[in-house]
Image (cartoon, rainbow, N blue to C red; front, side, top):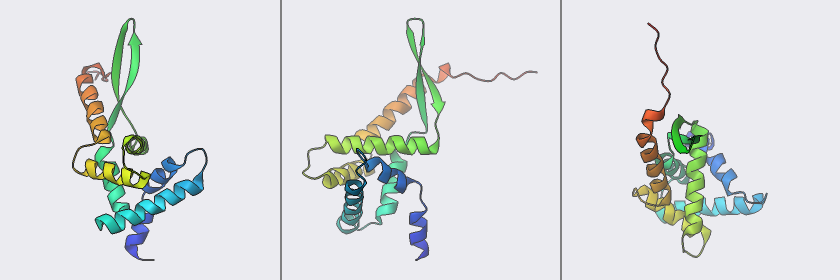
Length: 150
């Protein structure tokens, strides 16, 4: 096995992506979709499919999220840091939701079309990430700061 192949296999995003494709415990269907996606990415776009999927997920993953908290009648959005795994899961989930909403014939074509939109800084997942970023920035005053004791 070549060094590049080992690097591709050791990524944490690829197993997460594969796991998110599984619906109702149907691993065989998820495996078939994943393999077809890799083949299409390689021959249509002439790119390394593993690096391409990783770059798409990294472009759309949020660094922070928010928790909704009620104080009386007011609703507050409290910005919180999230783990890398959680942020990647959110990005993959948004990508799959966006692909389901598209109107192409096959799911593979829908996924590739959405990935190309993300590459050009458009698409549902990219807008979702920007929306969360905007909410976090608007509510940054709500974050609790540790006070230094003098």
